[in-house]
Length: 68
Image 1 (cartoon, rainbow, N blue to C red):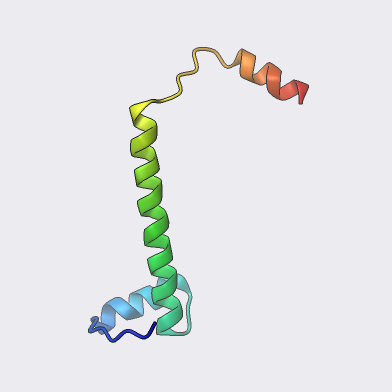
Image 2 (tube, rainbow, N blue to C red):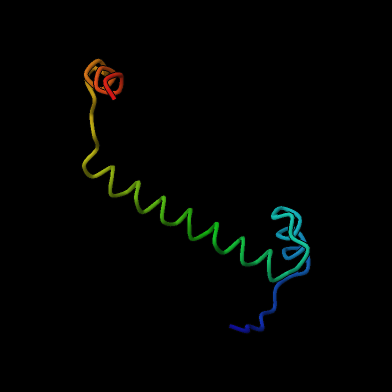
């Protein structure tokens, strides 16, 4: 998809620097993918916090791991 957007030069330059990208397209693509990943992690954390797994003692888990 081709998009025309007005974005401050300083912001684009920062994104290019932080993503180590040589092109604006690559930098924005990486930044958008990272944003989506972070968003999905936040949503997953919300779901997990509704029904967290509480481990009283880790002995049973350690024993199971050692058997595998």
